[in-house]
Length: 165
Image (tube, rainbow, N blue to C red; front, side, top):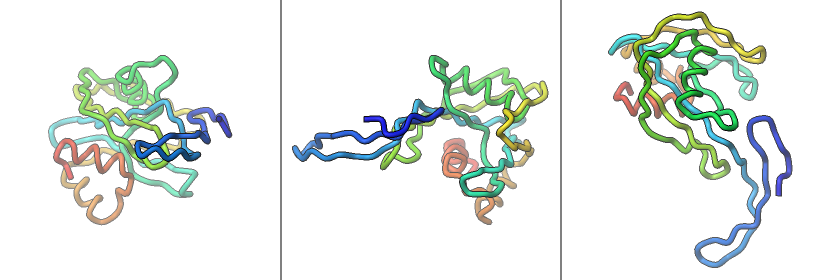
């Protein structure tokens, strides 16, 4: 049963039969999925974003990402989000794998992409996004992670997938 229908996800309460035969009601978030993009300018430079996140009330550093629109292919979403968030079009895009950020309470699956052969085209944030693209080196990413400046789990996991952390 949907308790709240949102723009990006729904909050539901459903009766679930567990493998051991027990039946219980569970509250969780049903999410249509999202993408995370690792935009590489070179083998040692990437573009991350400094974004104001309302939920935590501050700016954080993270990789570009976004929810997949209904009927949209993940790769198309990744290309769209790159333009919207950092102002680059990808000449190459490669799917790397999936992440489940919060399997205890959300169905969300993040599709991870690496983007290369980037061409600057100017970015156009959505009106409710406050985003600043930041060019970083691999060494800077490691330093930011070790010093606690990168706390976003999807960013940490995605950089780990390519050996940057």
